[in-house]
Length: 186
Image (cartoon, rainbow, N blue to C red; front, side, top):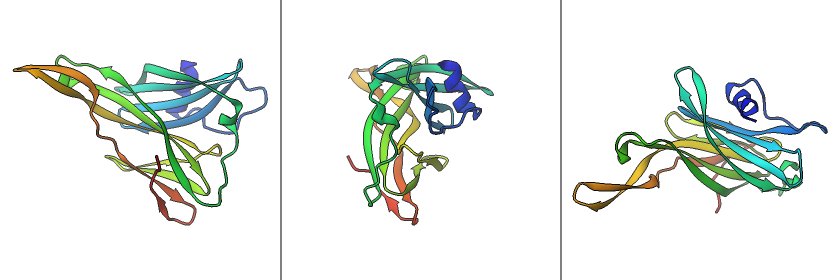
């Protein structure tokens, strides 16, 4: 599973429509500087499992940092919904502590948000540094990743407690085939 996700991040395996007997399906990928996400659907048993793998850049290579999984139905690989009107809907989100550092405020999180696109959305623009464009694939689901600093809550003079990732997240907009911009719902 890790090797499959690593091939997605390095560009050796592209996201595409699944073949009938294919057990692992390349679902979604996003590379955001020093963090990358690869989404893999495992179709070995029912219900299927969606793995979202988090990768951290270490020099010239990508190191596996962790993964999240959830059970999904076969509709996850269904073709994009054509509502006639472009829509971009926020779905689930998550984060994973990549490194805590010596002090709580020095740690970083790999964060992600998933979206469901319908209509003729062709890409999602992430207003981060640098500006990124993520393709909307045939199934209409998009994964967007970013790095966030730890949020520290003060509990006394000179003492702090890590309270998860900072609340900052990049601004995401969808781009329709006609060139119009769509803001996410939800």
